Image (cartoon, rainbow, N blue to C red; front, side):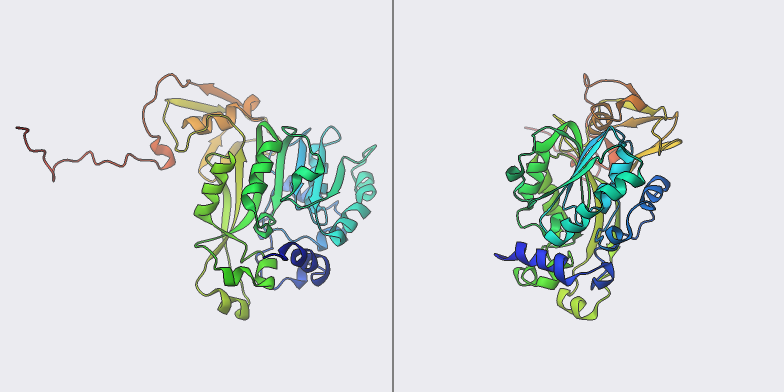
Length: 351
């Protein structure tokens, strides 16, 4: 583990020359991008796309004019897509520690400026380790959105990455990222395997450890946007991994004060008015919050804040407040841990 940063740079800068060199499908994006992402993707330079090693879609809706930071930006593919979607009024900063990847990204800055018909580029790249963001003199509370694509699993100190990301976000800002997670903790022996680590497998966090780590970093109530199982499809590596199961998951984390650990019921509701360009008829906050245009939907206090305290506020009508608490919000799967059925355990009379 002492040399993991150097090994990651060698793996992505020298051993992998393109996505066809990957030994598993962990660092592959199988989900079909939506129309607006596909349109931007068609403008991306071939070499930039060829050296893409992501596992998900990391650019959410409603990003025009935003200031975005990409952690582990690699060849710059997601940065350039984001650069197109935020428009000339927005900006994108990519951070990566691998010289070969940064060389590709920087090579195509002017290429994409011309492709997007911009007067000047709105994308820039910094060399740095995402575990040492303080060395880059980035301004705290300055980014609207932080993205990352299958990179945080490669970091040793994942808590620090999340904590630094929290500090760099503006209040109401969002971290939206894809990564690999496991159904159990990975042994130290497997973590020392250079190929398994480079393939985004042995550095994967056990999903429950991630939730605890995110909460400790300040990101309360992480929301899953989408997830899929990963099939390694490499007999030699599958034998090493045994029965461990892996998943590619896209999370969205909000920097919002006073979010609660559980979903609580305050009798609130919201209505999506429409207006988000990529979401004309409905808006999906996560994989279990679907808002059809014009329909009033009851929500928990956390969901209410995720819509009212963020860039999504102009597109919703809000009903209710936090003046009355009605207990756990069962609509998010919560329930009281005590039984209300005493038929099998009638209380004896007190003496």
